[in-house]
Image (cartoon, rainbow, N blue to C red; front, side):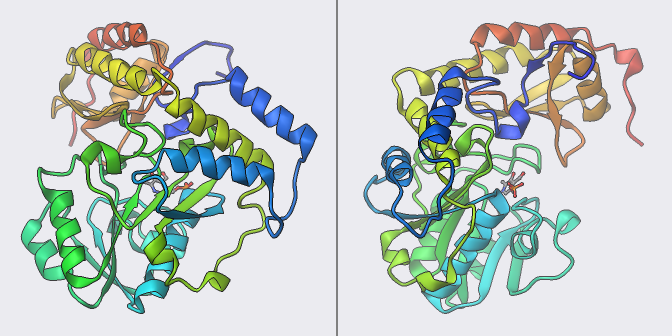
Length: 359
Ligand SMILES: Cc1ncc(COP(=O)(O)O)c(C=O)c1O
């Protein structure tokens, strides 16, 4: 930190530092690409792009069946997925969910929970409760271009999909011709102990977006469309100056390869289990989430901000969420399971007399 104090980072730059800080493999990949070709327009074929598509594509469900468009952020990846859905279906309505967070630009913000939404929606949006099966049955009809969701709602407080929920949405989309879009900006890139939530939950959508951890700290947005969707999309509508630049893609290739390397996802699972075991102490009543996207559910009398501030004083960095009773963990996926002990110690020393009682 600025004062020179060392902290254990259990927030990971908010799901960004997939490989941890100062990873040597990532440095070498970026350095080599900078020397070989620092930047070139994506109008020409780039070896860096070919390498990325091979490594990233191998981590997708049904590896060969996807088309990829590259941009610079999660919001942009989502905007492009929406554009693809409108273009492919000829429809203009989107079903989104309370609690959702999809970014702060106009279209992505229109799908975000009302509290953080863009002030106006540029298309028709039906926002229903996450996990409301009946509302989904009613809202997903032949007018809907796509159903857009985070498979696990992170900002909302690491809200898990109820049993059968993702399958239900898949079925409704199949029945009505709507496309199913997973925003995997947080849940993708190995975070859940599988390459993507699609594999973790065994439900494959038509569109996947990701960003944050995909390039381990450099800005990237990835919009993935089933080939059958991409074939119906007007490609002239897509473009980006920086999207798909060689240095960023060299980083993203390194991340994708590391996720696929033996033992990497096993470590995500083992570290997740260790954190879960360590965390139910002091103010924590329950832990939810999957892999290394975890929500510590606090005693209702305790504010998450007070626990975060206490842990930071103890040398452990965590995040909060929209739900004021939830502390969020999204550490580097290379976390040593033994480091869970520092979390346990920090939580155990939380002084209940200094608890911030909620109004
Ligand atoms: C699930 C999800 N989608 C989209 C975004 C937007 O990503 P970006 O900030 O890169 O635009 C975020 C950012 O927090 C996110 O958590």
